[in-house]
Image 1: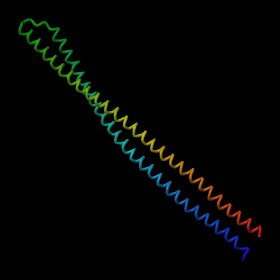
Image 2: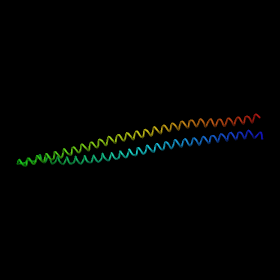
Image 3: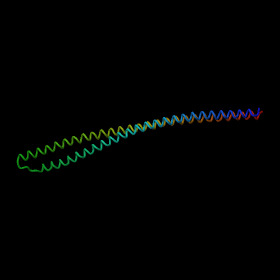
Image 4: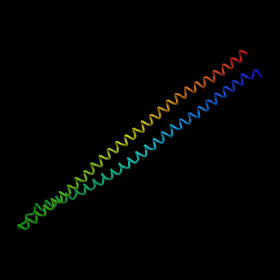
Amino acid sequence: MKQAIPWILLIVVIGLGWFAYQEQANKWRTEYTDLRLRYEKALQIADQKIDALLNQITALQHQIEESQKAVKAYEARITQLNKELVYLQEQQPATCEEQVANLQEQVSIWSQKFSLCSQIVEEKDKIIFSLTKKYETQVLITEQKDEVILHTNKLLKAAENRISFLEKRDKILLYTTGAVAVILIILEVIK
C-alpha cells in the first residue's frame, strides 16, 4: 500500500492539473466568444450605418441625374428658341406694325430664354448641392470603415494579449504539473 500512495498522489496531481487546465480552457473559450460577439456586433452596426449612407448616395445620384435631364431639356428648348430668334432677326418686316410685332416676338423669346437660363442655374445649384452632399456622405462612409478597422485592431490586440497571457499560464501549469510528477517519482525512487 505504501508503494501505491506516491502513484495515487501522482494521479491526483495530474488529475488536478488536468481539471485546472479544463477550467481555465472554459474561461478562455468564454473570453474568446465574448470578444468574437463584440466584434460581430460592432461589424453589424457599422455595416448598417454604411448601408444607410450608401442608400443616401443612391438617392443623391438619382437627384443629380434628374437635374441633368432637366438641364438638357432646358438647353434643348433654348436651342429651339435661338433658331426662332434667328428666323425673326432675318425677317425684313415692311411696315412699322410688322416691325413692332417682330421685335415684341424677339423680346418674348429673350424672356423665355432668360427664364430657362434661371431654371438651368437652379438645377445646377441642385446638382452642386447633391454632389457636395454625396461627397460628405462618402467621407462618412470612409470614417465608418476606419472606425471598423480601428475597433477590429483593438479587439485583435486584446485577443493577442490574452493569447500570450494564456500561453504563459498554460506553460506554467504544464511545468508545475510536470515538476510535481517528477518530484513524486524521485521521492518514490529514493525510498
